[in-house]
Amino acid sequence: MLHNHSIKLGIAPIGWTNDDLPELGGHIPFEQCISEMALAGYVGCEVGNKFPRDTKTLHHALELRGLSIAAAWFSAYLTTKPYEETEIAFIAHRDFLHEMGAKHIVISEQGHSIQGDLNISIFEGKPIFSEKEWNLLVEGLDRLGRLAKEKNMTLVYHHHMGTGVQTEEEINQLMKRTNPNVMSLLYDCGHLYFAGEDYLRVLQNYIDRIAHIHFKDVRNVVLKSVKEQKLSFLQGIKAGVFTVPGDGDIDFKPIIQLIAQSNYEGWIIVEAEQDPAKANPFEYAKNARQYIREIAGL
Ligand SMILES: O=C1C[C@@H](O)[C@H](O)[C@@H](O)C1=O
Ligand SMILES: [Co+2]
View 1 (cartoon, rainbow, N blue to C red):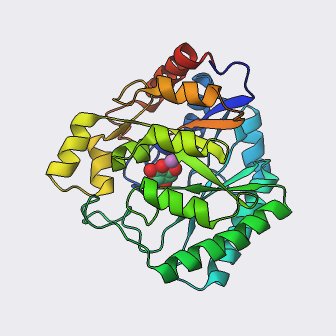
View 2: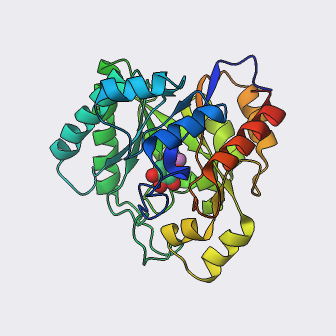
């Protein structure tokens, strides 16, 4: 049970409006999204592209509903573009999050990523970083992590399907080559399960270095067809490979147990991108909230 831990439960806007696939939930207004998050019982969220960038306006809209910003995704291109380009965009992102009171910055290397490519089979086209690319990645992350620390914030790396850091072995490499004082890990059980990796071992091995958590569930039956039909990541999303905790095939109880045995504090974010026309985001958000209350006492 997690009730003695300093953990806050938030939800990502991606179940309402999907930034990677704008046709999913493109019609759902920002105010509806955040009102439903609050009504479903969450106290925070990440940032979607419908969110106003003016921090005063955003702050007011969230405060009215008892929500705060936990973190937000940043796409890095350290392996494919000059470092300075990533740094300029990162500083703007960091400063926006800092003004919003967030403590974590989610980062994912998108150089050579196929996660946004509708036509490449997700199980066939992922990049494998060369030694040179690994060096560019870890050197860049070190510099960006120090920039986060300047504002008393923590950089958290998001391993992700279709990228150069997808597998357990790639996470091990990343953890080995980076400084724990400068960069932490984001744990997303849905991505590890999708990738066929040992999601419990990763949690166990790195729990002391994990500083942000995404909870997403996976439907085995859809995962099977993603493999058989050689679907891309986004085709898989449209077909419903992801859902909220409690609705899919991941057993969250041992995950909760490992977190409960640790000193983890911070956010757990329910993040379940699926088609809102098929899965009403408010209803699924409420169901996930109830499920987490039942299994985690949170
Ligand atoms: O944290 C995430 C952010 C999304 O944009 C991404 O594609 C999703 O799968 C995810 O885990
Ligand atoms: Co995630």
